[in-house]
Amino acid sequence: MPHARVAVVIEDDADIRSLICTVLTGSGFDVHTASAGLEGIELVRQLSPAVTTLDVSMPGIDGYETARRIRAFSDTRILMVTARADESDVRLGREAGADDYIAKPFRPRDLRAHVEEIVGRD
Image (tube, rainbow, N blue to C red; front, side, top):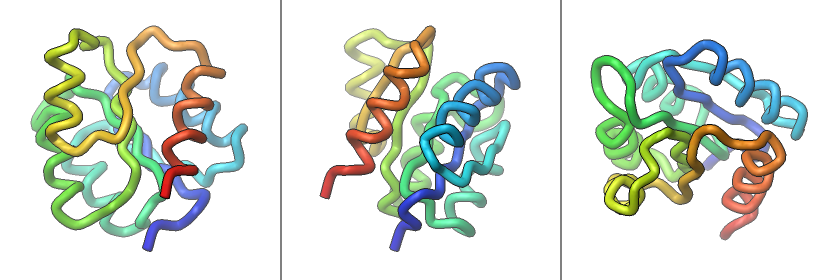
């Protein structure tokens, strides 16, 4: 069962990872971060977060494969946060298990709104 106010941020760019962490912490989440897909998968396995933000373009396994692997064992809400925002990318993200998609660059308030919307879903 997901922990209501726990979040995992999987993002290879340190500045964006820090920004997402700041936004989520300000929204009352206990935030844990990973800079790569495999590391993030293990955090999701250990922490059972309510929400996981996930970049698509990362070294090693990409965000689509990371989402697939997370979906194999978790019902955390997955929000793709990525510069790859073509319609085909959104479709691939959803097929991999993403619940929502937000394009970079994003406004912090938009990120907060997306997270609150997907966490509030039953």
